[in-house]
Length: 238
Length: 171
Length: 171
Image (cartoon, rainbow over all chains, first blue to last red; front, side, top):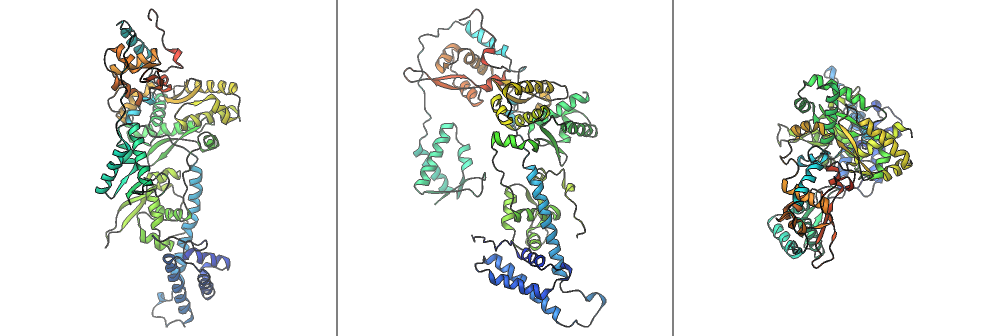
């Protein structure tokens, strides 16, 4: 993919043209097209390292300006009908004004965005979390808990001499996860990190999965990318 | 149910939901007609204007949502250091403002207004769920038509698309 | 900052947090002494008692949290159709009651009191963050010791673990 190099501060030909018109302090409805065209082309010449994609747009505009300039130099053709005496600059001016409107509006939007960014929303509760957002004093009462415990206590079970059970570890190993991920990647072009983690049955498995990913990155078996903050993390085979 | 309880119930529901809840759903669950409920919610929104309140209710496309008041941002920031939302570039804002006013609009129409390619901006705006594909144009190539989302309204504090600043002597 | 703004700021912070926020943190960020702030929060909690309010502030172990009033549960339930979980199963309640009163306690002790295996119940309670691992016993195998969480206190409306009904003629 081509690297976008911004031409000075100008995003595009309209922006540059506007800059020149404003700098020259001329009426947008009566642009001295010869002057502005010269300045515009000088500017293009000044810019040495141009991104090709952008450059073509700037060059198209240069051609448009030159065309308008030549039309204005020619003597006006004999009028065929009343409506045909359009100013050759008209189309360009119309486009420039339209662009200007949106450019101005974008600053209005910017202000609104800045203001609203300071407001926060609550994370949405999933259906099964709704219960937890209530102080369920009437649903899960302490009395219920207490009664349950009393009933159990009267069972008078021996609590001494307890034999401790073994603690079973989740037996997913990093090696297994690595082959699991590689298997996936041999079938699919890419994997989402989120999906891998969501598939895990336990916290430990999630950790093991993460370690497996780190190991695969280290061994240069996979390539991990994220296009922007909080976007999905994509895992690809190298 | 009296008005007081209705207000309380709406506050409760909006708090629990987090997400916007439509007037229709609220009216249905509270068993009141939408017109009456709308009036009560408007009153409730005024109640929240009080200076002892740190939260507010906003309206988006006929739905309501609870959010914090921006005046207290400094405290929230100090306490929770919220993740930067990563604003929008000038180019994205330009693209967005064109889509907002001209929707439904194709990429090539946007490009022609801006005078530059808008592919990257559009991709970013779609990812951020600020704009979305809202259809296809019935012309060769069936180009995608873009429009704004409810998230756009929320981000920019607009009730609905009619709430956009009006375009003056233009078009 | 006047009292009104402090109340609003606390409301805002608790709303954004969702989780409990300690008096200490609140006092720090608002730059007020804890004693004064505690009085203001108590006033604020009274304000929330009003019948037009659907949410409230609860105190848990010196922290404050915003939650919805349970009176309105029916509406929320209708609206969001939560999975028919209805809280906790009998087995989970039994297990939880043992842990609440006997903490710290190992799984095998729980099993032996209940007379059945409690693995599934414990897993579910840990997932719901009602109980947690609070340490290991210094015996062979180093078994996990379980105890209740702050979430447990919140769910049962307790300020602290000492608030549990006392066991009379037992133990």
